[in-house]
Length: 89
Image (cartoon, rainbow, N blue to C red; front, side, top):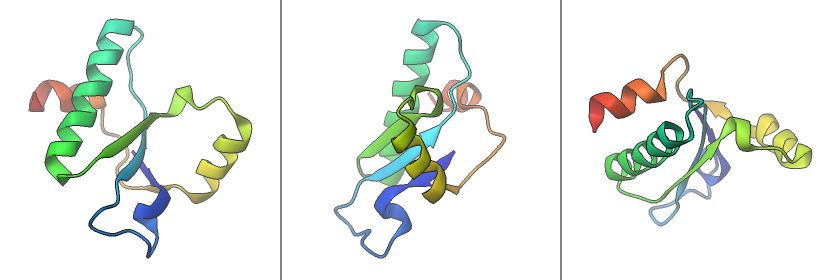
């Protein structure tokens, strides 16, 4: 999971949302959607603020990809979102 955007800057405040990039490991579209939304809502409950969740594979625009890759910060690696969702829902 990567943090991007204002959460990494001094502009982040109590009204800011949190922008995250994640990898969701699922080839089944229903499971993928369930995992995406369950994870997003679980993070919103945890942080008590709006979460903008981007799925890494869905970022196709090269300009946006380069911008994200140049500024992202790893906040957790090696954790399976599918496991998180199943354990915490």
